[in-house]
Image (cartoon, rainbow, N blue to C red; front, top):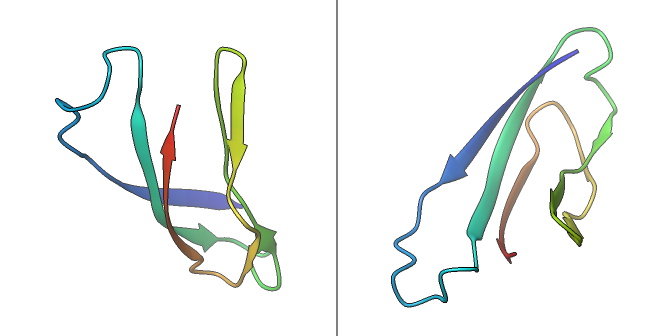
Length: 68
């Protein structure tokens, strides 16, 4: 199964330099295992870990922002 992710860049000048704003927007799953999959994204930066909610389908959309 192949996954294509879409992310959004944000201007982060108002955030502390040690903070990253990451947006998880959507994905497209390709291949035989894509149908019926519960898909989620886990982001890990050093000791901080965040996970999106699981979304079912071949084109999951999250539109979730994470500050790491």
